[in-house]
Image (cartoon, rainbow, N blue to C red; front, side, top):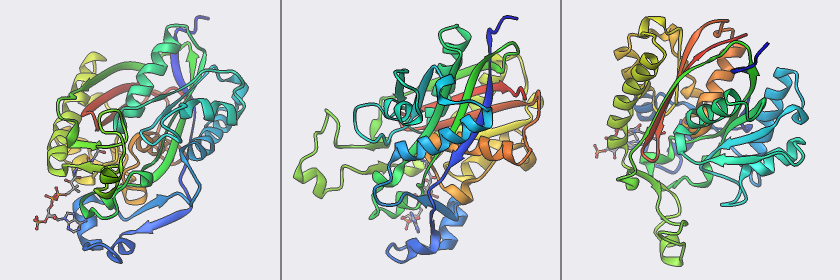
Length: 329
Ligand code: UT7
C-alpha cells in the first residue's frame, strides 16, 4: 500500500466562552444591531478572557482534532499554526503549541497570511505529506483578533472575534487534495494592515497615541476584491482539478461578511444547502474561520465520504486562495 495521498483524519474547534453581541457594541459605538446584521450577517462573536492568548485557543482546538482522529500528539510529525495574532512576534506560536500538546522536539512554525492562512496552510501541509516529508501534520488556524482590534473604529471593531479550528492531516492511499490556487498582491498593504509594530514603523509613543498598533481596513475596497477573488479562485481551483461547479458538494468560505459569501455563492450557483455559513456566531476569525466552519459542518453531518469541497479565502496581503478537496471518511 503506498501512502502518497493526504486526508483529513480529524477536526476540532474552540471558541472562548465570552460572547459579545451586537447590542453590546451599541453601548459605546454609534452602531446598532440592525446595521451590523444587515451589513455583515454577524450577531455574536467570542472574545478571549484576560490573559488568554492564541496558543491557548490553538491547543484547545488541536486537542479536539487529535481526539477526533483517535491520535496523540506523539503521533504528529509537524505542527503548523496559521495566525496573524501570535502569542509573541517570535518565537512562533507553532513551537509553543507543539510543546504544550506534547509534541516533544517536533517542528512547529507559523503561517502569517491573514485570513488566507488556512488555505496556504492546507496547501503547504498537503505538499509536505504528499511529498513524503511527514506522515501526520496538525494544522491549526487560531486568532485572538481582539488583541489588534481598534475599538474606537466602528467600521472594523464589530467584525472580529477570537477562536481556533484544527485539522489532523495524514498520509493516505486515497488522495483528498485535488488542487490549490493561491495568489497575492502586496502593492497596497494599507488596504488591510496593522501599520506600526513591524520594521517599517517601529512602535513609538506617537504611533500608540494614533492607535497605529491596531488593525485598519478600507472596507469597501476589500469587499469588492473579496467577491471577485473568491469567485475566480474557486473557478480556477475547480478547473485545475478537472471539475466544474456542478461537481461541487460544499463550499466552505472564509467568514468575513455574509454579503460577500452570498454574492459569491449566487454567482457560483450554490444554494444555501451547499454553503457553510456560521458568521452569525463567530464574526470574522481570520485564519480560524474555515477550520471552525469545517469542524461544525462535520459535526452537523454535512460532510460525506467522496464529497467535493472547495475551501476559499481572501484577506490581508492582499491574498487569496482556494483548495479543492475530496472528503475521505
Ligand atoms: O477578512 C477579510 C477582511 N475584511 C473584510 O472582508 C471586510 C470587507 N468589507 C466589509 O465587510 C464591509 O465593507 C464593511 C462591513 C466593513 C462595511 O460595510 P459597507 O456596506 O461597505 O459600509 P461602508 O463602509 O460603505 O459604510 C456605509 C456607512 C458609512 O456612513 P456614511 O459615510 O454613509 O454616513 C459608515 O460610516 O455606514 C457607516 N458605518 C456604520 N454605521 C453603523 C460603518 N460602520 C458602521 C457601524 N454601524 N458599525
